[in-house]
Amino acid sequence: MKPQDIASVFNSMSNLRSEELLTVEKLHRPVGEFVALEDSFAVVLVGGHQYKVTKGDELMVDRLLVPVLSDLLLDKVLMVGSQDQTALGRPLLPQAKVRVEVQEHSRTEKIRVLRKKKRSRSSRRLLGHRQPYSLLKVIDILIAKAE
Image (tube, rainbow, N blue to C red):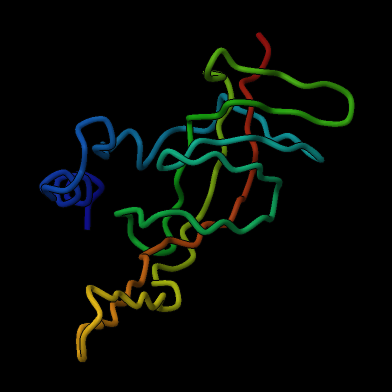
């Protein structure tokens, strides 16, 4: 399947917000102008939640509509740091990216909620919920090359 086809499939799904639409550029961005940082951490924003990540970490994030075993470049980086120095974004760092790989899509264990309406017989109801998630593995923390 071509990258243009993958992006058009995901863009046609109605439950995506307009700012989260995937494009061919987001699926296959060149990383030649970036260099990987060793022994560093980053704080990234994924699905409205902030995660502190290092190379090799695995994160459980809300379900992403991306195929399994595909690489993603997370560009909403709030902070990058190491033992020597730290760079803070205001609010984002445009020259920093985090490359991740989608490991799997699954659902969490079922959460059971018991609801009682009134004091009478058979007025209870047992409800359950399983939250869908994606498991991401951090491959690299990238920063733009100094010119």
